[in-house]
Amino acid sequence: MVDTERTTWPSEPVLQVAQPAPDPRRWWALAVLLVATFMDLLDNNIVTVAIPNIQQHLGASPTSIQWMNAGYTLAFAVMLITGGRLGDIFGRKRMFLTGVAGFMAASGMCAIAQSPEFLVGARVVQGGAAAVMVPQVLAIIHVSFAREEVGKVVSLYAGIVGLAIVAGPLVGGLLLQWNPFGLEWRSIFAVNLPVGAVALVAVSAWMRESRSPNARRPDGIGMILVAVGLLLVLFPLVQGRELGWPMWSIVAMVIAVPVFALFLRYEREKVRRDDSPLLALNLFKTGSFSVGVGTQLLFSCVPAGFFITWTVYLQGGLGWSALHTGLTTIPFSVAVPVAGGLAVRYIFPKYGRRCLMVGVAVMTSGVLSYVWTAHHFATTVTAWHAAPSLLLIGSGMGLLVAPLTGMILIDVPPHEAGAASGIINATGQLGAAVGVALIGGLFFSQGLGKFAGKQTFGVVWGFQWGCVARF
Image 1 (tube, rainbow, N blue to C red):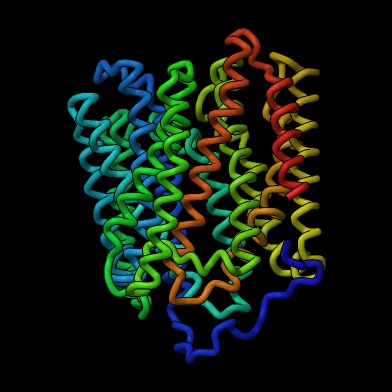
Image 2: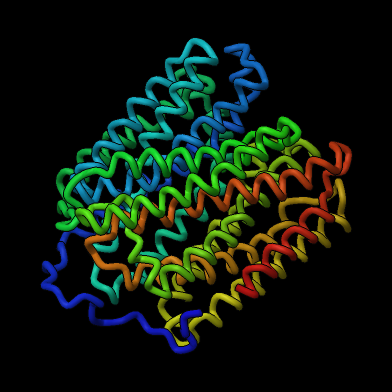
């Protein structure tokens, strides 16, 4: 365990190498990076709101609807580590622009889809493009900002992540209600086109190119091995619950173990031969990185599992509209960046990992208070009843996520920024898939008539936060 009882953001880099002067346009570039991050995370959640409209207009089957989300998630998660390393090799700005352009093209394909099958295929392409775009965000942040600025920037990043997690129902509900240009469900994809176009122009003008001098060429075999391993884990996690956990899903996850072992062995040999591996194994020798990634894996299980079951509870159980549900999340969305900013500027530098434990405690108190609220008010619960609990949950998330991300990044050498970002994002996706499988499985196994879900929220959240606290 890394000793962070009195952790400060270091003022000198770990590697004593000459660093370029900070880019004076870096804050403008950051705004574009955050918008792109929000766009990706939003698209990962927004389709759920439009499901009835898509079924009405395309006649999509339940299987097709499921794959509109699963296809995006799988393509995104499987390609993240590769996407991060490609930025190190070919240039992070170049790969970010490539990812944004691909994301726009795939969004256009989604918007003009005339069949469920075409829409599913376009969503897979969209997820793959996002996997090229997203890892560059943390990598560019890491190489563009001075180390004393990292905490502030990461708090903004964490705020955007928290906002995007819960903004899908709100934005999707607004677009479907306003129905711009009569596009119906197509508007949730078409909105990415102007946003992406602005991002392309702004990035070209404001962002400085950066790449790693050590990563000389792509590691094709490593890319294949890690993609196969992640697919063997993520596909069963995404589809297993819906299919009743058939035997093949268990076998696939077991097979993933030797595949990952083979991948790690190959990467070690790759380092000995030419020092151009896909996975920078030396990152895990840094205590802050390895401990932080492990903690993130546990933490990522919780928000994804909670919010998917919470959304179903409100909309499916209580009959709330998507817009009503989205507006209810405003206290959470405001609390995350505010608490995150306080954490990285004042609390974490002074108290170290105790800040993370306070975040755990605050978030747990928010969940427990919501359990009581859902039980006490039952079907008469309102957004005002939920607001205090969501405020606590958001504050706890900000106290935990913002300093945790900064802790993971702070000792990463700049030339490994893309690889580190890919690992961080892939870990988050894996944790989210596990959380949805575990928490969602327990929630839905109670039956559609038990939407209060107090056993789910109390037992599973208590177990998960117990794991984080003991890590």
